[in-house]
Each structure stands twice: as C-alpha cells, then as structure tokens.
Amino acid sequence: MNLEEYKGVYVFAQQVDNEISSIAFELLGKAKDLAKDLNTDVTAVLIGSDVKGLADQLAEYGADKVIVVDDPELKDYRTEPYAHALASVINKYKPEIMLVGATAIGRDLGPRVSARVATGLTADCTVLEIGDFPLQAVPGQEQLHNQLLMTRPAFGGNTIATIACPYNRPQMATVRAGVMQKITPIKGAKANVEEFNPGFTPDNKYVEILDIVKSVAETVDIMDAKILVSGGRGVGSPENFKILEDLAEVLGGTVSCSRAVVDSGWKPKDLQVGQTGKTVRPNVYFAIGISGAIQHVAGMEESDIIVAINKDADAPIFDVADYGVVGDLNKIVPKLTEALKAEIAAAKA
Amino acid sequence: MKIVVCVKQVPDTAGGVKFNPDGTLDRGAMLTIMNPDDKAGLEAALRLKDQYDAEVTVVTMGLPKAEEVLREAMAMGADKGVLVTDRVLGGADTWATSTTLAGAIRNLEYDLIITGRQAIDGDTAQVGPQISEHLDIPVISYAQDIKIEGDSVVVERQYEDRYHVVKAKMPCLITALSELNEPRYMTPGGIFDAYKKEITVWGRADLKDVDDANLGLKGSPTKIAKASDKVRKGAGEKVSLDPDESVSYIVDKLKTKHVI
Image 1 (cartoon, chains in turn red, yellow):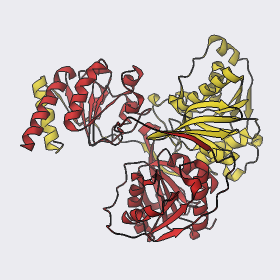
Image 2: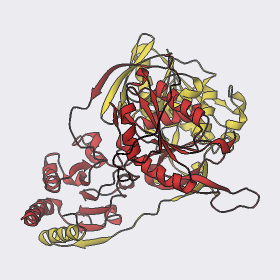
Image 3: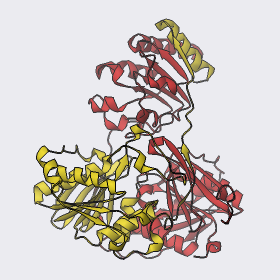
Image 4: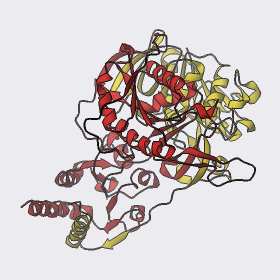
C-alpha cells in the first residue's frame, strides 16, 4: 500500500428516505477542520437512489466535492450494496481519511467496508485531530506526522483512548452523533458533483427487505433532548414520575430514567440513560432520586449542567453534580416546577 | 441446523479498569462476566435449539481463563465450546480479532453465526460485521427478533426510528441486541454436565486461511497512541436546605446559567 497515494478527507453522507441525516453535516464540519490542517479538500460520498438532488445541501455544509453513487438497489439501506458502493469509492478515489457516522447504519457499514478495504476502523469517536504518531518521539521508531488521531471512550466511558491508524489507508472512524459542530450553511453553494456507479449485481448477500416499520410514537429521543429530567428508584413508583413530567414540561424537557426504573418496569428501555442504555449530553440533566452508580454516570456525565436531588447525602451522584441538593424529592420537585413556571411567566411578561 | 455463537469474556466494569504499560487492557487483573449482548445472542441460539433441535457451538477468543464463559454457555445449554487462545493473538484490534475468529469458524459447520452487537469493554460493534465480511456471508446487525423460515432467517433489524424486517438466506451472521430476550439461567444439572463436556482449544496453528500479518497486536491496523482512566470532572456544590430554600437555590443557579 502506497500511503502517499491516499489524499483528501471523505465523509459518508448518510441519507434516510432521501433526507440527509444531521450526522452528515456534523461530519462535514469536522472534515473541514481536518482538511485545513492537511491542506486538502473535503469530499462527501452520497449513496442512495434518486439522491443527486441532495448534493447542493452537502456543498452548503462544507463539501468541496460530492461523489454520488445512485442506483435503484440503494433505495433503502442494506449492508451489501452500500458496502459495495462505499468500498468501490474508496478503492477508486483513495481517500486519506474516511469518516462515517456512528449511527445504526454507520456502525454496520463502517466495519463491513473497513474489512473489505483492509484498513483499521476506530468506533464512536468523540475527538478527531491531526497529529503525530507516536505522540512523543521514541528512539528507534519513526515518528509519523499528519496522522488522524481518533479519541474515543471505552468501558462505558470509564476510559479514554486515542487511536491512530499509521500504516493503513484510509484512516477510518465512526463518529458519535451530536459531538461535532456543523458550519453555518453557505447559502446557495453549488456542489461539484461527480457521478460514479460501480455496478450492482445482487447475490445472496443482498438481503431482502420484507417490511419497514417506522416508530409510531412521536417521542423525543432522549439523546436529542436539551433538558432531561431523569428519575431513579428514589422516585418510588411509576405514578410518581408525574412530578418529573410536570417539571420537564415547564422547561420544555424530556423525562429519562436509570436502569433500576427500567428493570422495575416503570419506564421503557428507550428512556434509559447509562452504560446499557443511552449516552446523553443535554444542557441540563436533573438526576432525581438517582443514586449515581458508575454505569449510570458513564451515560450522563458529559451533560453541561448536572443538578442532583437526593435524600442520601452520601449518594455518589453528588460526586458528579454541579449543583447537589440533599432533600426529599417529593417536597422539592413540585415546588420547583411551580417556581420555574412563575419565573418563566415573569420573564415573558 | 448448526449455529455458532461468538461470546466474549469481558471485565465487569464495576470491578475497575486496569491497563498494561503498553496501553492495552490488563484483562487478567479484572473480574469478568459474559458480555451481555453475547448472552442474548446465545439465548437466541438456544431457543432455536429448543425449537429446531439446532446444534449450538460457542466460540470465544481470549486468555485461557476465558474457558469460564464457555462453561457458563454450556451450563445454559450450548453443545460444544471452542476456546481460541494463543500469545500471538493478544493485543488484537477488531480487524485482527475478526480475522482470528473467522479463521476459527472456517473449521466449523454453520448455518447461522450469532454474535452480540457489541461488547461492554470496547463498545465498538465491529467484530460481528467484520467476521461476516471475512467469511463472505450476509450480515444482519442489531437484531431485535429472529425467526427461521425454511433455508432463510427473517430478522427485525433495529434502526433509530424504525425497524426493517429483513430476510436472508443462510448461512448468515446476525448481531444480537440485549433486548432480544431475557437469557435463561444455568441449571444445576447443566453446570454439572458443562464440566463433563470437552472444550476444544485452538491456537494460531489451528486457524484456517489466515495470514500472520493480520493477527495479534502486530497485525492490528489501529494502534493505541494513548489510553487513560477518564478524568472525572469532580463534584460541584452540595447543599442541605429546607425545601423552599432548595427550590430558590436551584432556580437561582438555572438563572445564572441562562437556562431560564
């Protein structure tokens, strides 16, 4: 592998139902930073059926070039035709860096493609930067420059590792949603589009989609919420979550919960924060009646502001809370809701 | 029907995390459990065994002590266990791990391979799809339901806002979500039987069609530049006030931070 042949920062521009996913714009924002450091440009790879019309949006968010792979076989996501499309783009265009969103699509597509093109893949990155490998010069080992350094949490957030892929190309990473910043769109930007079709020949790896069932409930994904009011076993009963829902409503927030609550059958699994649930990073996280086991903390400690209410002054949640209140949630939460209602009404008046 | 289930022995994060000087995990120093998603995958296989009399072979790669998860799997009802262990396989990233497991699975007959979606230590979700690529078979990730229809599997494949009902011809690889099922417990008879069964132990020499250049730490394209315990941000303020004062305190903080 001649590493020098590999140039440019590429982004897999995920679309679902011919609508570009937010993660694609986030990746473009990061790709622009990386490309600046490497003095190269940013290419978006748009894969789907009848998707060419979406290319200009990618230009608005920073893509210098858009490679479009458009084929009826690519209508809904299936591993094989998408992997074939992306691997073929990589083999033909030889990118230095290939970024993929760490979504339910990207975490399937990324590994399949990386194995096909025989390179490394670092999962769920939260920080990407250009630097040296090894980080410090080591006698007897060549220090390589302009490497992609990929930082990711592991062990449910208990550890942080920075990974490089020094001897293979492309350097591939999946990137966690909601972490990288989009640029302010450049209104009216037009994409420099290049169409490419590697040919699609269905075989046994082309699985058949029998049905697509979209979630009917219009519930807010707790990973997207700006304010989360999260309850633990200390809330006491499923009925008592009403006081948390009232608080969430006043603040335009969403209710989430700890594992104990899900295990007790009080709330569904998709509201669970923590190592075996979801990782959230809202602006404000209220931990109410949550003791703060390490598995829970791993899923919420990146929140901007953590407010904890717990009657046990020694609860570990207070070790990560910005504002900890020792007290009875049943007395405090309803009063807090009323007080905030009054404050917000006063601010509007 | 023959089913291969890949399981991993993972550190129980409650027991703390320890590193070797080279930045890789010191797995020997930590308490361990069977990875939860893998256990769900095993349970799915065992249900197919109950229904169709499938033969279930459990494969793990790890230190010799990873035999423990094979014994656990057999006590739950798996028929056979294969431990892939060799010093030259240590320090593997997902590429080298999937290459190793594919090399082991090539020695086995299978209609279905089930892996967990991801392990709670690495959290990558990469090894399952990468094994399928090495074996050139279809993959269905994030399975929340698995059914057999003749020579095919019909799987509910989960996405963020939907699921696809997907049909694939076997052989096929499926990655299982923990919410797929509630794994059964080991039975006393099962535990007794598990210790009577033979475990097959394979080393580097037993792997089929793999190149040394793709194994272990050296064969891993990704290299750890730095690893460390996460620096936690530490405690902020903690107050003990009466309810009304508590409310004023919180409201005041939210105002200062421009939340309201």
